[in-house]
Length: 441
Image (cartoon, rainbow, N blue to C red; front, side, top):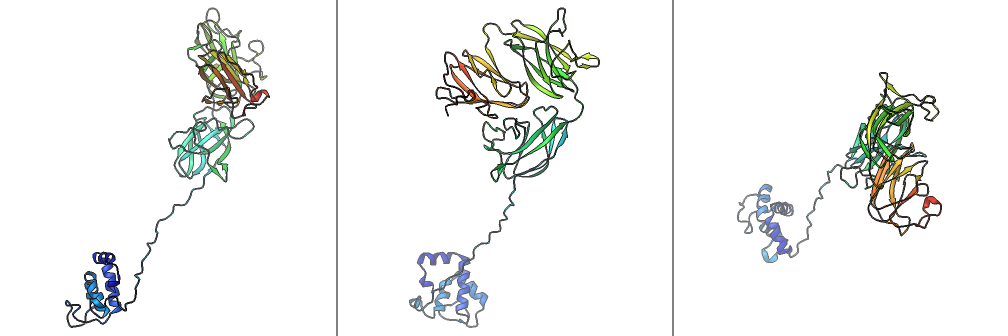
């Protein structure tokens, strides 16, 4: 029987102890009563045990198979039946990890304006749980990030996030899951990936209410600064009632001249950072000015100090007021301001010289963004995107090269908010999408 096998397979069988034992078992089954003979000179004339047959067959399979065939080597393979050795397929014992279904659970909370705790979060890949503010008209404003926390795939409870953007008063906030894609450990949505996690084609997002708790202590911080003469910036401020942040000039002999107002901005109760105020009139000389807090009392949404109320906010009986020096740059102005007001860019078209810095200032109480676009073939392809999440936020870009630079607010769409910066001796004859004539899509 062994003679029917190919020499290659026969050699492999002889070299494998396991296969040799298998042949021995086959040998015993076919010839259970074999005794001594010339084919097996090692055996004794007595009965040969099964164990001994297995041992011998493991090393001398050809001898055993020849004896089983009932003849010498010339008869090997004649009249023999083909026998197939059964094989065993290994059983896969790997335990598949249960899949995680992305989900969020939230509830309305009161916070000290720094930490927010979500009830639970689960994600099926490495990613982020992110807090976005509410966009105008509802839904999450994905352009603005209030807080984010990186998560590995898994399920979590009591997820705490540290706020990185200050809130004021009561707001609707959206918790949202994002994948870390590309996997760089940095949250880069929407500029560079990190897309929202979806289930059944819908983003995993949950809205909830945040209420600012605790007593807000009115405060101001200021810093000396250089300006084009059009704007000043207050690094931080806080107010405990609806009121005003006001810039007063210096009075003769020192101190604020409360009878003259250079700039005003209404504030709701809360904390604010990097508040940019546009001066009512441009200043041309460097000088000392005063930032000062006033309450809106009577509450008529108009700053009427000193004629009709709106008194200064005081602490320990003293007005909260801080002086700082403003240095006006000499020569031709190198700054152009574009305001985001009433859901529009103002001006829509700005003409500047090369090297001019354009500053966008959000004057609305809700979030916007400024994102580069190309509505017409004659416009430049450029890459710029920034979010202005709350009133007073600013962003700048310096245009070094001549050309037509178009942009939009992606939150509200190009038909509502669009603009163009014309740098140098260029012109744009076509209408922009927000001007009613449509773009060049």
